[in-house]
Amino acid sequence: MSPSRKPDPAGHRIPSLRSRRPVAGPPPALPRHNLAVPAPDDLPFAVGTFDEIGPLSRAGFPHRHTFYELVYVTHGRAAHVIDLETHPVRPPHLFVVTPGQVHHWRDQRDLRGHVLLCDAEFLLTFPADRDALHRSSHRSWRPRDTAQARRIATLLRWTTTEYRRGGPGRESTLRAYLHLLLTEVLRSRPTVPAPGPAPDAGTCHQRAAETARRFEELLAEPDLVGEPPRAYARRMGVSVRHLNDAVPLATGTTPARLIRRARVLEAKRLLTGTDLTVATIADRLGFADPAYFCRFFRREAGDSPGAFRRHGGKHHDPAPTHIDVP
Image (cartoon, rainbow, N blue to C red; front, side, top):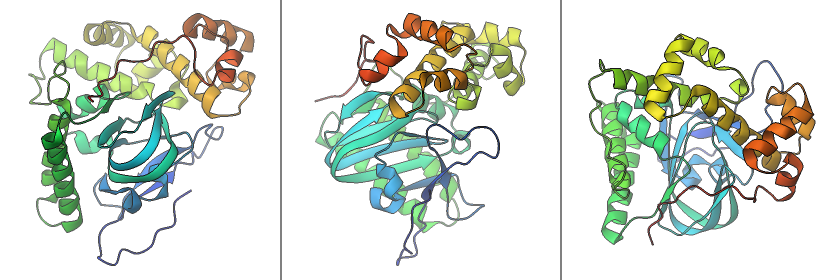
């Protein structure tokens, strides 16, 4: 499902998005896009306008990514749906979509702006930036004032120019620009500290935070939904005891509870974003008995799967707090 691309007359690198096709197992219920950079050995990073990234940057169907996406809409109208929550777009407006989240655009009209994509490995130099992106999921920002809007747009222009230019120091410069961009964006949220140097990696709390971050990233993997904590611990190369000790220390809740939440969220995604039967969804989520899945879903979501689907995902669940600034 790779979009057709025309050569760029200026010789700029033009990234694209491609659907991921697993080699084994059932086909994905929701399309999953990979980042396709122009050369196999190029950076796992891309930035450009909606038009430069391609049609899938404005995809009107529910899908998920294997990478981070930061979108800054500067013109047009649309509704951006991220994991069942609808965000009316009011330019200038910035969104963060993390790996595994399901999103799509609706009712688009002349949508323009900047799109920045990067794989998790691009963020290894600044772990705090990776944590900041994770904390930013399910949220949207509008600049507090015109001056901040100009700063964000300027940083994105500089990043795009550096990405196209190439040459020595390109990778470190792009990471620095991304760090500055995240710092600027998170300053709109006084309750969340801007990214900065990570604490001493030898501390107990820092090790717990790293374990929790890796665990939360795996929770976004649809192939692991429904697996017990030991399956996640095995993928992470840690013991179940370490996982059960570290995650509550960093998050305040247990791995089992987080897995349950991830299971419910994936069920909601499949109920609203696909035509799969309830029995098929139950099977994909690891439930041998569809009736037990229905009881589980009603207990956790407050509605039956069928009613939740009929209501289009609108029911008694409280919406996450937003930080949009008028």
